[in-house]
Amino acid sequence: MATKLEIINSVLTEVGRTDLVVQARIWFDEVYQTVLSYTDWAFITTRATRACGVGIYKYGLPIDFRKLHVLFVNTGSSDSPKLHEMALADFVGRYPRLESIPNGIPTDFTVYDNNILIAAPPQSNSYVMNLIYTYNPPALVDGDTPVIPDRWLNCLRYGLRAAAYLHLREQEKAKALAEVFGGYLKKMEQDDKDSSDDRITLQPYRRNSGIIPTEYWKNPFIAAVQ
Image (cartoon, rainbow, N blue to C red):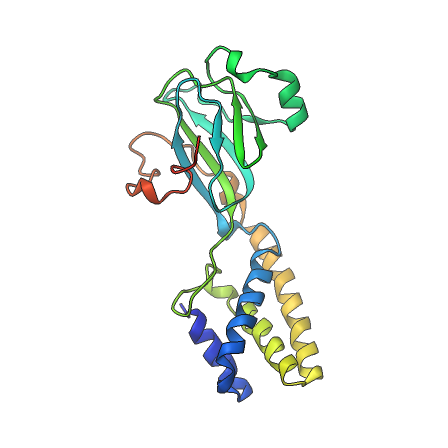
C-alpha cells in the first residue's frame, strides 16, 4: 500500500513539479481530512472494551472518539444487554441521582462531556463494556499509509492533483479534477454503505474470543478516565 510520501511524489511527478513536496504535504493533509470527514466510513469503525467497576456509572470516551454506534455490557451470561441510548435530558429525568441508584445490570446510557453515563451502575467487576464507534484517525507522516482501503486511494490522488493544478494556476484542470474528486467521494460513500452491514453485525464479546487485544494498554478506551 502506498505511503503518504509515495502518493505525493507520484502526483508531483505527473504534474511535473517535484519541487513542491513541502506544499504538497499540506495539500495532502487537507485532502485526507476532507475524505475522512465526508461521512462516518465503515473502515474507520472500531470496537473498544473496558472492564466495569462496581458502582461506577461514568466512563471516559476513547480519545479518538467521533460517533457512537453500539454500546453493550457483557455480563458473562445470556442477559448481556445492548444499552438503550437516551437524550441527556431524558436520562437525567429518569436518573436524577445516579449515585443513589442500586447497582445492577446496566440498561440505559447517555453521552455527556466526553463521558458515557450508564444506569444502573454495574453490580460486578467482571462486566465488560463494549463500544462500537467511528474514530478519528491520526494525521499521517511521510512513511505512514492512509487508513483508506487500497481500492479507494485514487480519491486522494485526484484531490491532490486538483490542489497542485490550482496552485499552478491551471484553473480548468483543477476544476475538472475537483469534480472527479467529488464524484469519487459519492461513489465511495455508496460502496461503503453497501458493505457496512458488518459494522452493525459484529459479534458480541465472549471470554476467550480473542476480541480484546492482548496489548490492552494501547486501547484508548481502556485508558479512559473514570
